[in-house]
Length: 392
Image 1 (tube, rainbow, N blue to C red):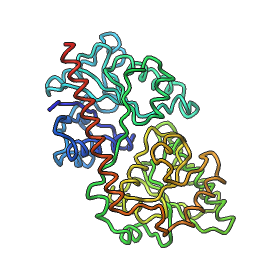
Image 2: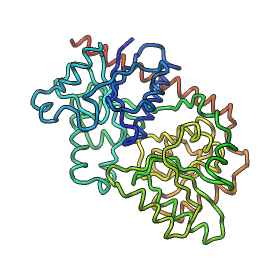
Image 3: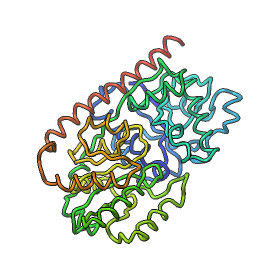
Image 4: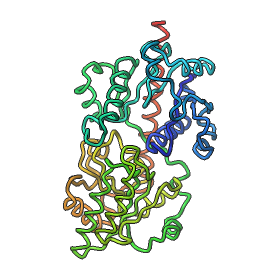
């Protein structure tokens, strides 16, 4: 087995990244060929509840002081020496043979082969959402990873188009591996009645399970609800997710204010982080799951919905169409009127079986995606490790 290093993201700061890794380890354990052994390096102050999903045998966990926020090796030192020495020392101590690198850079002389996962190129497509410093920090990090990594892993063909257009040097190094989601027991352990009672939901609702970040575009949904109310259409949206956007720390409060100003009352319900089992129960019980995002690399929300056969109402961005192949309602993410029309169509079709996969059909399709995902991830890691061994 190839011992492969992963640095666990902070769940509070990057919920999507955290969930991506936990899901990846679960998929490798359940559907892989036992060819890759994940070794997860977590900050010393990482909460036990964030580590508990990993301590079920899906990954080996190492507490690593150098992984915490603000404790990474100084970038100046890495640039001068070409090596993140603290990371290298830890990896050698634990017999690491390959490194899965995301939102980090280990240096231009790092001796262990690196696979760089670049989730998306949001900063190049939505530059206005980044401060100048944050934009350059991300841009220089991407350039460094693209230049020095053994392989670049992307989650969609849309991302590959961006990567090879924006960074021509990446051509020939990219691998597109769309991820699939393993819901596990969480998908059906909580009943729809129980979750409605817990959150006080007495009427039909849409569900929006995206962290409250600016590019996730909650505002267009709020404005669409006001349009529906003005037309006499009753609709409710329940939203959940991490409430802190590191780049826009007042965003959550501004969304709460927007709901009040538009007089929507309980029509838009704010939840924060909730148990994963509750997320799936809310998906199953909804009219449809909404993702109004302005930009995605490959949406976890969409994959989770596909895994259980929940209807979808999505922003009409290229990756959403790629991910669903037309099996959703789409709307212009800049148009509240278009979003309201899509919600109306979803309300009209609610309860109708035409075009909605059965639970067994959804599970069978998802099983194929999971097996493909595990096979391709293992193949990429094996190839990178083998090439490093030959060149070494």
